[in-house]
Amino acid sequence: MERLSSQEGRALLRKVGVKGSDIELDKVVANWDGYALVLSLLGAYLVDVHDGNVKYIREIKPPTVNEPRYERVQRVLRRYDEHLTQAEKEFLTTFSAFRLGVPPSLFTSIFQGVLPGQLPRQTHHTSDFLDILFRKFQRLYQWLIDRLLPSQRRVAARLKRQLNAPLADLRSRTFDAMIRRLVNYRILRYYPEANYYTMHPLISAHYFKRLKELPHKAKEIHQRIADYYLRIAGPIPERPTIENLAFPIEAVYHLCCAGSYERAYDVFWERVLQGASRVLTNKLNAWDVSLALVVEFFPNGDTSQEPQVSDLARKGWILNHVGLCLMNLGRLAEAVSFFEQSISISIKIENWENASVYLGNLTELYIFVGKLAASVDSARKALSFAYQAKSDLDKLNSLVNIAWATYLQGDNEIASATFQKAEALNKEMYSEAYLSRLAGIQHADYLRRVGSGGYARQVTEVNLKICLNNSWLASISMSYRLLGELDADREQHDQALENYNEALKIARSISVRDVLIEALLARGRWAARRGEVVAARSDLEEALNYACASGYRIYEADIRIALAWMHLANNNYLAAKAEAEKALLMSEEMGYHWGRVDAGEVLQALEQKF
Image 1: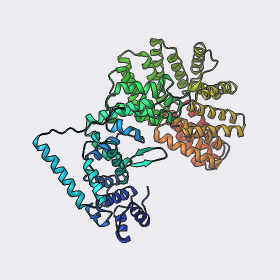
Image 2 (image 1 turned 45 degrees about the vertical axis):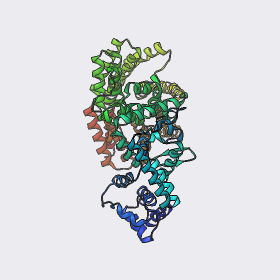
Image 3 (image 1 turned 180 degrees about the horizontal axis):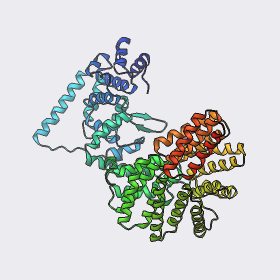
Image 4 (image 1 turned 90 degrees about the horizontal axis):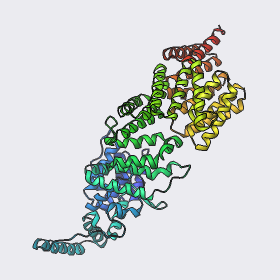
């Protein structure tokens, strides 16, 4: 949040119950930089420990000028910890393990470790002489407190003594009172409409650090939480949302935290990805969520180490999945080593099917970064492994990769023959006339470029229906983008714009960087060729930023060519020449045939201007 003003901060402190002059309260706000969380914690502390008297704020040293907000929260919480009871500290440490809101129904089973139908265990004291003396002293102390303190403070003091028992030994009434105290402290937040409790992330981080210092306790807590989420997670609907997967996702996270990596892998594959359908990635395109989850299989999230599963095939799959997530999120340079490791493991254990799949992913990555010769070699190796694995699906994917990579290099003869082989195999396997998903999009892009626009439209319209039926959002976006290109070729510009807009709307709703770049590039290039400079500049500059930041050199060359057309339409000939020449140089370095062709077309148009 932004810094609160003096008036806003003072109002917050008074609402919490802090007493003092405006000048004193304004000084607290100024000293703590008006940070709402810190002010609410400080106010609750003063109310609980010093009856709200602002003068006692001097007990907590104010922050230095450049002290991070997290450190300020930490320092206030350390002061809180001096006054929290044993049970409260145990509760908050356990609570910090959760990432979602916590309903009250969990308090007994998770926080006190009591199964439904059991009572919390009670403390049993020995009856030796020292214990008898101790209990007499406790009664005497209670009698003195009851006589010397006002009624309200006597109740609070008695509760505090009760809360010094272990969390598991608290009776329900004391436990409920503890929860109310923590809410009053502003450490816990309760949302009655949803009936759950949460904790601010900075507060949670403070107690989670403590939980990690108790590894055995942490494992037990995470295991209980995982079991809870798996128990309440219902069946996944046919067209799920990310919310439908929330509980299985949390179960995987907590199982990894508990060290139950094998079970976590099974839950991830069976309930989050839904097996080969890969719901989280292929349908929801939530690659960021998937990456965050799969990183939990590495020690402390350190992906430079090995994933913590025993089976080598599973290790290879996890490494490949990290690479896929990184590639789809536009982190291309980071993805390479994960693909290489997964391929190495698959070859080592002679899992030729996985080796073919992982090489196919590496092929796609090589194309993005402009290593076209390497992409062809990789695709051909993938095809060889597909034959060893006797996998028709992997043969099909490898053929499409070879066709696409050779097309980009300008070898239309090989590309055409290989696309035809892929199409024939696809008909044999699925009795479908056309290639689908990414294979269908690449085939249609090729057909359009070589002058077979009618056939390209047939492939794309059928492909779009298949993708819509399966909710494959990335492929749906690319299909609309391609329909826009085909409409523009026919000069049906209203329909082209409608398709471009639909493609971009979908692309912005998912976390797949190349799909977004393609949609921006297509609409921006179309606007540039029509002389719509303002619209073209907006799309193309956004696309260029993404391409340069992530290392998509193929896209960068295409975007610069489109920018050259935009500058030409704006009569900025020097800028147009600079962009076209840069794209031409890049295309020469990559062996990108169509980049050379398109850049040459712009340069030829410029020559006619002089």
